Image (tube, rainbow, N blue to C red; front, side, top):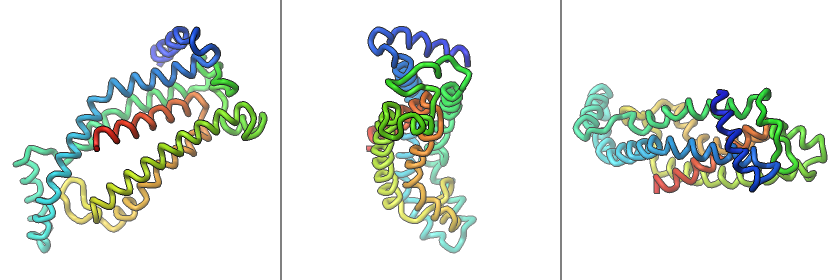
Length: 234
C-alpha cells in the first residue's frame, strides 16, 4: 500500500507547479485514470465476451422454445451451443471480476485516514474531510460545499447516463434469463433486473459519506467506466 501512496505522492509533486494546493487531488484523478487504462484490456475482453454471448441469444431462444418442457435437455443443449461457438458462458463476467482487486486496493488507499494524502485539499475542501464536514463548515454553498456540489452534479450526470443505458439494455434483453444456460431465471432475478438501472445513483451516497480523496477516486473511476462502456458496447 505504501508503494502506491508513494507513487501518488510523487505524481502530486510533479503536478504541484500546475495545480498548486490541489496537486494531490489531481494526482488521485490521474493515478486512477492510469490504473483504469492499465486494466482496459480486461474491459475489452469483457466486452467481446458479452457481445459473443449476446450474439447467441437468438439461437438460445430457439432452443428454449424447442425444449420448453425439458429443462435438463435445454441446459445441455445450451452448453453444447456455447462449446460449438467457442464462447464461454462466463466470458462477459470473468475479466470484470479480475479488475476488482485493483479497484478495492485504490479505494482503501484513498480512504486511509492515516495517509499523508488526506492532509491536502481540493480547492477549499480537505481530502480527508467528508460532505458532513463541509456542511458544518459553511453549509452546502460554502467554499467546501461547492466542491461537493460540483462532484454531485458530475456523478448525477454519469448515473443518469448509466441509468438510460442499463434500462435500454434490460428492455432489449427481455425476460431475465440465467447467465450460464439461458433458462428462465428465478422470479427474484427479474426484480433485480428492474432495480439494476437505479443502482448507479448509489454512487451519490458513496461520494457523500467517504473521505473526499476516496470520493475523487469513485467519481473518476465511475466516469471512466461510463465512457468506456459507451465506446466498447456501442
